[in-house]
Image 1 (cartoon, rainbow, N blue to C red):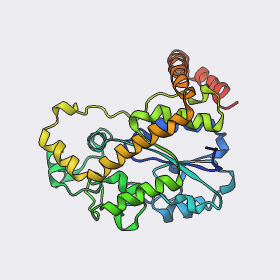
Image 2: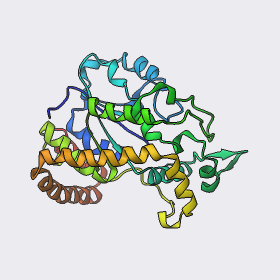
Image 3: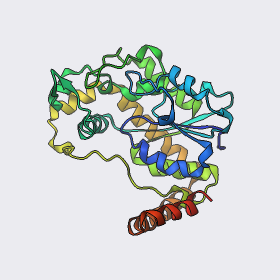
Image 4: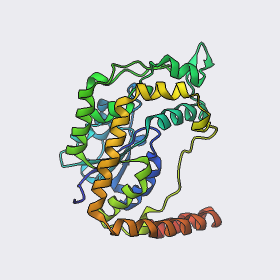
Length: 297
């Protein structure tokens, strides 16, 4: 495995993508990185990712040859905008955990699902079974199939899309096999970052990170009514298969990097704790100077 000229982080909502990005981005120089939040006139589809057209329109205004790392809620296929080889990385999450995290994170940031101006309860949202986020969302995005997309609705509204079928899941797997450097489950996120580090030859300190965007106020899984969990599982049968397949695939892939990867995992645990502790103790200005010294030189 060799480092691609362009690495694209396909950030699926509520799959640990902000945490992964925080680990990966320090391996690149500042002028080599591009976050999708910088896209001008960014337009989102009903999938919650930027449309291909808005990505292309905005990226063409930049010097594409300088970009070595692109990260954000972008669609699969954005690599076609660049006239050079590119590979993706991504993280998938068990759909029950992802749906619950997505629903309660929306409430946390003041962007809940609404009905007649009031907040929908989790029971109402799940039992309705219509929203595109609730139905095999990860397979939708990774498959890149246009027939699974939908137009974004008004704030707080559910978005309805075509049902995901077996051939869409097959396409998602083909895309991973053909276009991805690696894909991993959320539980394998740190190992994925360490694998990317090894491929690029970065020093360990570049992967320093703390976990970002936690969902506060979310009930424990044990406190969710069993019939709601069953509905989520039924609505995400293809996502469950994709999640399990990706986890097994990555477990096999990481064997190419053993025993070094397991050793790196232990070292990383120590290095990251030290840097996080220093970050909490130092004043902001000193933290920034330390970060500049450690990560970008």
